[in-house]
Length: 172
Ligand code: NAP
Image 1 (cartoon, rainbow, N blue to C red):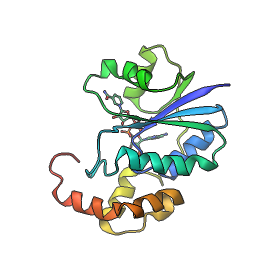
Image 2 (tube, helix red, strand yellow):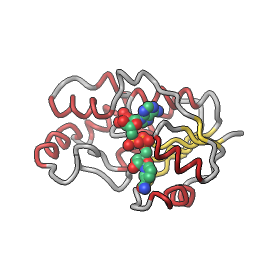
Image 3 (cartoon, rainbow, N blue to C red):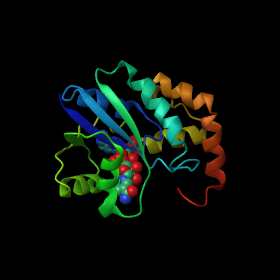
Image 4 (cartoon, rainbow, N blue to C red):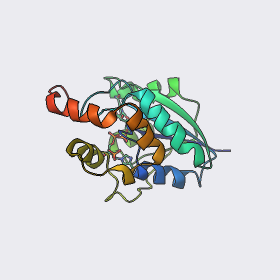
């Protein structure tokens, strides 16, 4: 029995993340999925709340062959303490999966094994591109799981993103 760890902002959770987790599911039985920047929402870069992202992940992962433990992780302003912060909130895990240089550095310094990748069709799936399509009223629905479309519709997420993108002077 192996338990992995994978963190992302999931703004929104999209087909690339889903493809990555399906690949990870081939190598571990359980996965701690950290919702990064859980304290952020209602900005152009981070439009959705941790709760909304939790629903996206819970529903989308229902058809993946692993047991997910979804844990919101707020950012802290001291990178040197971030792994302790993560470990204080998450179930124990054996191995982490990341391509983020800072995340890899911090986890490996703490003695945690990190496996790079996999990357899933990165040219097609990008959170920034999906958010931009929403802002500009272009099609984005084929880039995310159906459960994510439903969640975004339920909270009027496209309208929210269009609204905050007009006057979001605090964070982009
Ligand atoms: P991120 O900031 O969410 O994403 C960074 C970039 O990597 C994005 O362009 C993202 O694309 C892309 N990406 C995500 N998963 C990928 C994959 N499997 N293959 C290729 N590219 C991928 O960073 P993250 O690594 O996904 O999440 C790290 C989280 O940890 C963030 O919330 C960060 O704030 C947090 N963190 C906090 C601290 C601290 O508080 N001091 C320290 C370290 C990390 P998409 O936009 O398409 O997702």
